[in-house]
Image 1 (tube, protein in one colour):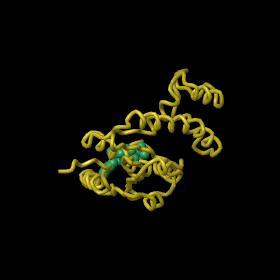
Image 2 (cartoon, helix red, strand yellow):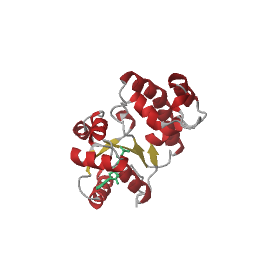
Image 3 (cartoon, helix red, strand yellow):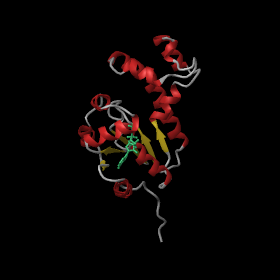
Image 4 (cartoon, protein in one colour):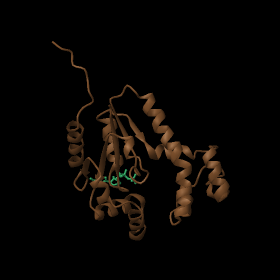
Length: 205
Ligand code: ATP
C-alpha cells in the first residue's frame, strides 16, 4: 500500500520541472519512462538491432547510436510503424519499472514519470495520477521555444497526443502550470500532503 505517483501531462507542460523538484527538494526516487526508453535502444542492444533490421543502418547517426530525429521522422506520420516501435520498447520499459520498484521496495513513495501513462494503459500500475497542465497556447509557445519548432511542427506534436483536458479528467491531481514556477511548486507541496500518507505504525503509549 505504498504511494506510487504516476506523473504525466502533455508534451512540454512541465513534467520535468515537477519531477526535478520532487527528486531534489522532496528527495523522492524518480523512475523515468523516457530514460528507460532511451536505454532500450542504446548501442549494441537487441532492440536497436531490430530497429536497424527494419529501417536500415541509415537510422544510425554514426554507425552506432540511434539517430532519434530520423527515427521520429520515420514513424511520426505512420501509425503502423509507431505501433511496431512501441511494441518493441514498451515491454523493456515496463520491466525496468518492475525491477526498480522491486529494488526500492522499502521506499514508501515513488514517482513514476510516464508521458504516455494513459495511452499505454498503465493507469493500474500507479496508486494516484498527477497531470501537469497549462493552456494550449502556453504549451505551444513553450514547446516552440524549447525545441526550436515552428508553429505547425509544435501543433502537430500536440495534436498527436490524447487531449490534455481528457488527461486532466482522469487525474486525481491536476497541477496547473499556467502560472510561474513558484505557483507550480506550491501546488506540488500541497498535493504531497493531501493524499493519505502510507501507513506507519504508531507505537501505543
Ligand atoms: P516533455 O513532454 O517534452 O518531456 P515536459 O512536460 O517535461 O516536456 P518541461 O521540459 O518541464 O516539460 O517544460 C517545457 C518547457 O517549458 C521548458 O523549456 C520549461 O523551461 C518551460 N516551462 C515549464 N514551466 C514553466 C512556467 N511555469 N513558466 C514558463 N516556462 C515554463
